[in-house]
Length: 126
Image (cartoon, rainbow, N blue to C red; front, side, top):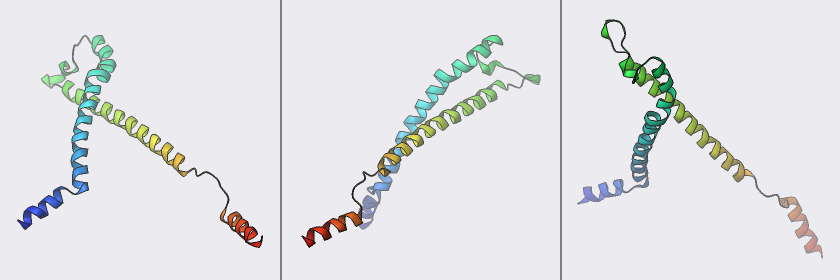
């Protein structure tokens, strides 16, 4: 019974639950990014180039000796787009955090400690 209680205490720690939530949200975010890349950005960028080459998909590209390099190019382009989109997202998040930190740092100015002590001294003299 002691091992069960110890496991329960471990599983219910805040760090473990936070990690589990992060993994689930990360997986969902991964699907959003994949959909953005495959369904929105890649067609916008590649469609004109593929139409010029008279191809419907980049995977149809064939090199010398029947080696298909189109699949590799597709994966490479998807990677670059994903990396760029994540860069933009992280940059926006960092800018938002920095803006909030600046707002938090700004403290309304009030009387200094010396001014308060002077006021107290003057009141005590009266």
